[in-house]
Image (cartoon, rainbow over all chains, first blue to last red; front, top):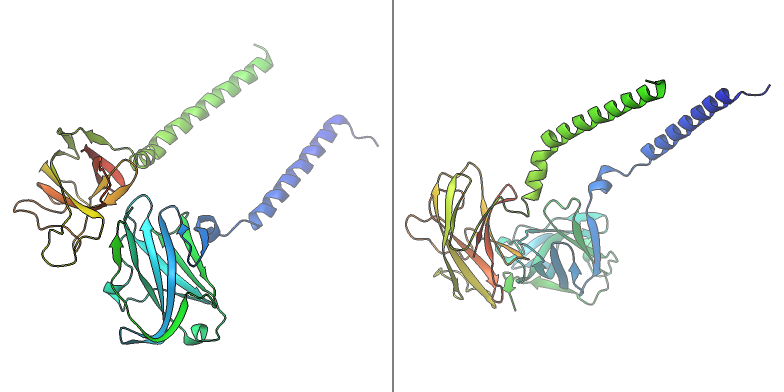
Length: 189
Length: 167
């Protein structure tokens, strides 16, 4: 039996609708998660080089791993990340964390006045340290886990985030029994 | 009227009605949000150099701009190398609205927040406040690189520039 033209058109419509619905279902089940949608844009840079995002710049100049900082013992090991930072366009308050292996560490508040915590201003560099208390096996001699310092401003949603990689064998990493901190220094020169 | 013409008339009326509804919705729902967004970069009020103007039910007039390369506070560290402290006095009358506001100095490209408590702000004279949200004359202090030429003082509220005073 031969299909008449109106029947053919109706069948074609049904098939097209089914295809569109199926395609929509596939896309719906394959959507990125909200954290991917609103997450930050990572700006990668190695230690020793300047990472430049929308709002701030940062350069990791050295990393000191010590059991004690300013005579205060760590629960694990202190990781002191010496960093030079500045704002690009406007005054910004930076935030940071450190990834080591599977762990994410927030900066310690034990050395409040001697760590990077002040707002950054355009044209005025700040040299100071982020300090983290990290599980000893992850940073003791022989550990192979790289360190990753992440720095951002605001809530980090839909904004750039500096991601600075520090390999475990980077010559900028030094290990000592005790390390000292000095308050962050600002300079416009 | 033919059947096709009636159909076109109906469709056209439908399009006009939908466009009107969308326009009303956009104006009512997105209008305030768009205005707030626009005033993050465009001031609501601009006051010329040496002039006074009204914004937020207050009268504003920038009275003096001073620069110093020495910290105005006797204790604490000196100014960072290569920086200057810019002190700006603003004469203000009227009652500030509820809520927090802040001051930002700009050179047209970059923006610096006013120094907060514990920064390089001097203790202002009697009757002058260093806080934007308090009533009366106000003094702001800004730490700037020495080569910056500021062009305007912005008063910020909820991320918007409510008033810009040209220097």
